[in-house]
Image (cartoon, rainbow, N blue to C red; front, top):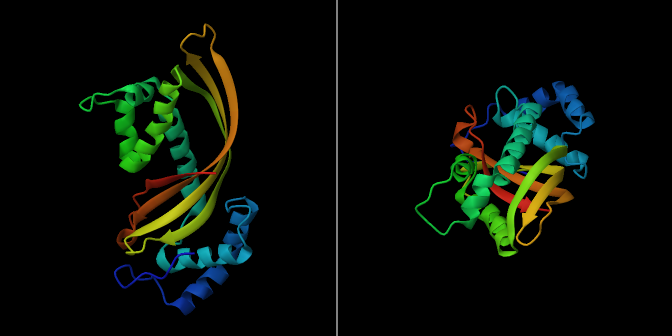
Length: 212
């Protein structure tokens, strides 16, 4: 759970007032829980601590359903972009001066390290002889809050989101006349970050991608 940050990102209320406000607002926490907005394996005590954190540092209190809706839209954008023909070409390119729209788009919503990590997967497809791997359908079955932490220097607030998905793929390979298909069930986790000193104006970006 998140550590308490220093004065540069002051709480919106005293701890005592935060507890009172969170208690009065507890029905919203119960609703989030009923709607499956938390990681299914998350202990009840951790859910309560996160709810207190949101009340202490956000005014008005943090809107978790809205955040997770945005996180679901972000995942859909990332998947459809990385499986595009343009990004497949970017992964195959040895020309450092070339610019690809898909790569530029991903860089606008995530760190360069995340983009490079994704590119490695598609470079491996090229090495295996694939000429195209396309996403024909993406099913997002679960999008839930997994964790809330703060960076060691207290500069960033991190929110980890857990996804459970099914990817429907079509793949073309050198030497194969027919397109093959594959259906993959997978879990992934994205870490979103925003500046702790500007929680009134959230500016989320993807800081890290975890595989499960």
